[in-house]
Length: 202
Length: 202
DNA sequence: TAATTTCCATAGTGATTGCTACAGAAACTC
DNA sequence: GAGTTTCTGTAGCAATCACTATGGAAATTA
Image (tube, rainbow over all chains, first blue to last red; front, top):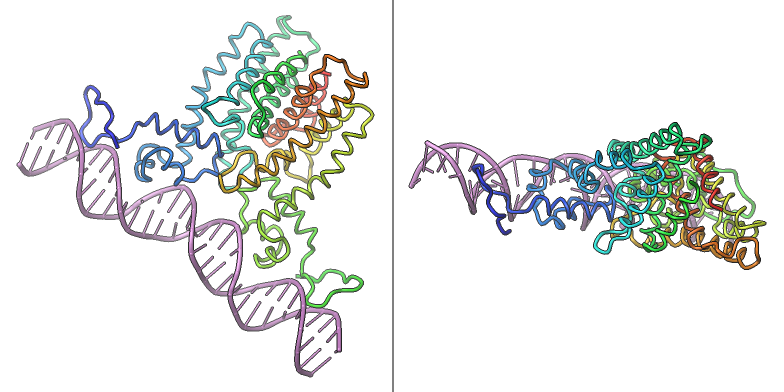
């Protein structure tokens, strides 16, 4: 393993032989491709270029690694929530979420689909806690959009007859569903047109 | 195990000690709740009320059991495809699919979500063949709807400017997505309103 | 240069995985 | 009632699972 470039004020002891960020990125991609439970520690260590003791020392355990991989994927949950709150309109926020999903689901250098949408939808009893955490993140993003829609109804940007819950739910159903369509082989062009079709409901 | 009621012209040998249909139903529910890979043979045998040798004798192996469970769930794929083809309009077929999904995803006596949508979206390399089979079924249903939409465009029931692929894709994205929303806790009322919202695109 | 700290690779751990060998049980047939 | 056929339960199989004990390596510090 090649040593990483030294840093100022280095602590004593043997330095890591691997790039933690690169290892995390590799783990993220494997979880994105296969899902949490279908990805073994053996596959993770191989993709990350580390041995099991190094993985456990650096990341804690498989679940902690997964949580960190999800956060790495999102680029910070708060940034996404702020993006929804700060959009000019709820409609623009929804459109942006749909377009981002369509594009993110069909990267040339990344697995198809969305890690948040697909890596743990159902699970064994043993992984229920992890599943619930990811479900809570999904709900949180949807809730933020719903609140933004409700706000736009209040300030007149949207019709008073708009069903905020159903409208936000529809956007998130499409986002979730496009992830599976991408994994089933759908291309970016198709997903972008689906996103535009979905926006016709506004 | 209590013996099942005898049947006419019974073959020689010891009769099964379990109800094959009931066992299949129990297996279907477990796959529906947890997904294919997260469900172990130990859990299956417990839910089905049989021992491993009996499971293997009656169903072949875990994958064969899963395939049979999926077919049991669909009530026959051909019936669904015929239902799309025979609907009065493509719009009615789409609406029916969405409503059926919303209702099926939120049964009182069944796991939340949809077995076809959620039991294997991503997978390990070892289960890729099973995943592809299920993906092919999903694509087949979507293709049948798309062809029905194209037919309605041709015969004037739908506007010539309708994008058949995007419209069918949108319906299936919502169907897939509602399954996840149901597993994340969304209720039937919400899903039905999402389905109605989705129909506003027609 | 010896002591200390941190990391690494090897070689496991106990538990679980999908699946089966085999002896016995339960039924039918002659 | 003995032989045949089919099914059952027990007790495994080899492989894999998430994770770790331990001795040695690589670095810094005094």
